[in-house]
Amino acid sequence: MANDPKQPSLQAGIRFEKAQKLAREGEKARAEYDAAGRAADANRARLKALRLAKEAADREAEPPPAPTASKKSAASKKKR
Image (tube, rainbow, N blue to C red; front, side, top):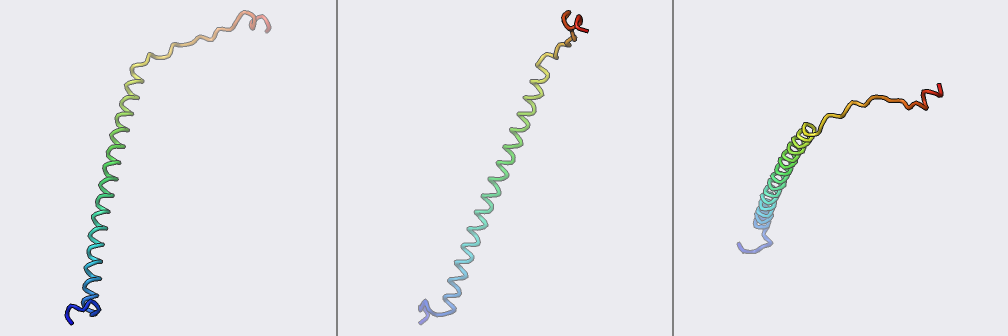
């Protein structure tokens, strides 16, 4: 009768082992999820730094805007 699966103490032990296994699998899945999130955050930060560096280099490389003198046409001066 010790191998009878209907015995309450055996059923409790089986349920406990199954719950422990599910808990370990859940912890492992959570750790993988967190690691993937940290990797994505690191990649996002790296790409942002590259983008900001490129934008700064582009701003330094482009020539300064030429000053524009406000020239009014002779026709607009005559109307006044």
